[in-house]
Amino acid sequence: MNIFEDTNPRALKDLLSEVHNRTSVLPDFQRDFVWEPGATQELIVSIANNYPAGSILRVRDAKRVFAAREFEGAPILGDAKHTFLVLDGQQRLTSLYQAFYGVGEHRYYLSIGKLIDGDDFEDAIFHVRATTKWAKDREDFETQAKELLLPLSVLKGGAGGFGKWSRNVARQLDDKKRIALEDALEGVEEKWIHTIDDYHFPVVTLSDETEPDALCTIFETLNRTGVKLSVFELLTARFWPQNIKLRDLWDKALAEYPIIEDFEVDPYYVLQGISLACRKAPSCKRSDVLNMKASDITEWWDKVVVGLAAGLEILRDDCKVMLPKWLPYQTMLPPLAAVMAKAGNPKTAEAGAQREKIKRWFWCAVFGQVYESSPNSKSAKDVVEILQWIIGVGLPESVDTFRFDPRALRDVTPRQRSIYRGTICLILRGGARDFHTQAVITGKIMTQEGIDDHHVFPAAYLERKGVTLSRNRDCILNRTLIDRTTNQMISDRAPSDYLADIRKTSGFPYDSVLTSHILPVGADSPLLANDYEPYLVWRQERLWQEIQNVTGVKKATDLEADLNGEG
Image (cartoon, rainbow, N blue to C red; front, side, top):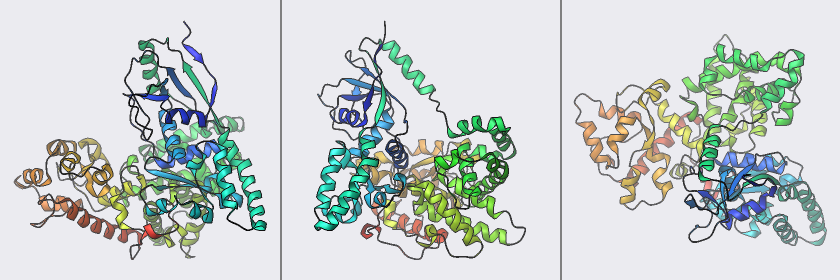
């Protein structure tokens, strides 16, 4: 029996329409949507450039063997009758559906002005948290027209949506300016919008005769495999005839600098670092990396590897990025490696001054969410400006223009990985201790004790108290690093309850351990009163003080009123 019904490409807009209409759904046991907004943005950039983005596997679900559910953000399945179960492609379809249909935690925008000026697509796209005042203000068409800002949701039905939007934008102007803008918008439509509109995913559809045991085997296989050909492999093949064996160089780097393997660094980032270091005008876009010469590798590989290892040591030892999961942006590694490679390692006190500048750049880039969009362009700019800063010329824009609104900490959940992970590192920077052993937390202790980020006020407890919105329960203010044993003891208990058990342990330094996590102590502690709002106020203020210390920023900024709003 042939289990394949067909293997035909399907238009992206049609696939997303099927998600919205609940023609395509998910098996109920599929894992939840986990992609971060930056990954969604990268996928959209690939689509706009008509790059392959994998295939979709689905089955015609006539037998209804598995319970089904809708994609996250799509209308509730309810009694709707679906046709297909998507077996592979959930994360991509969910992320694209949320982006193009304007649902989920973030909204995606295109700066049409940048595209008109000839900027790359990756420099024109950005995302904003949906709950911000800035995003809500951009629901107004007149604001969109004034700023030439296109919500990606306009494109959910295809190029026709852009055509209508662009005509209405042009009508805001007098005849001469209108004609010029229409011509410019038509150029954007031809170059970018039609590419998105015409984009097709290869789709493999299994027939409704596929047996349940076969589907189970397929799921198991999909969860074990999934290897793609990377730029590193492509360049490995290209440079092999020139006796440059990239795989051997990479293995040697991992052996000589274990910290690179500890941080699970993708070798592509070394290649990007070389591309940034070897050019007079730094650049690390995919095309630049692919077009590097053998001589670039020969001259810069060792220097960039050494620079990468040195940079990672700064992040681990000074910024307390203890494990790869707490690194806010992997995409910060190429510019860090390139800067360290080009700046070298002075044998004087200049080394200490250089280190301080690298640390400040790191914190400003993390809490400023600099690498949330257009990371390749930001990398190129930072390399130039940080190297100038190191020799005493000016400040990098990412440092000079850094602003922060501490109220944002109330909305920061694990989905906002930069600020979330950066805050965890800030807590570690203060010498956070293990609640179980009271040892200062290190990467090794994290692994041994099963230490991870958990709620201070347990989510179930808050829900019983009427705190129903997940972002209010899961925000970084309500999180700290807690070992497995202690977290099991906490369960869903009130803070005053589980803290009483900890306090009564003879000889345990209760106050110093809690203080190390930037948590309140003393008789008036809101933790002992189980008072959530005063607790949030207290911790927001203390974490804001820590952010000021590491970034050098002096005062808070009302980013809700800021018209820039990106990030």
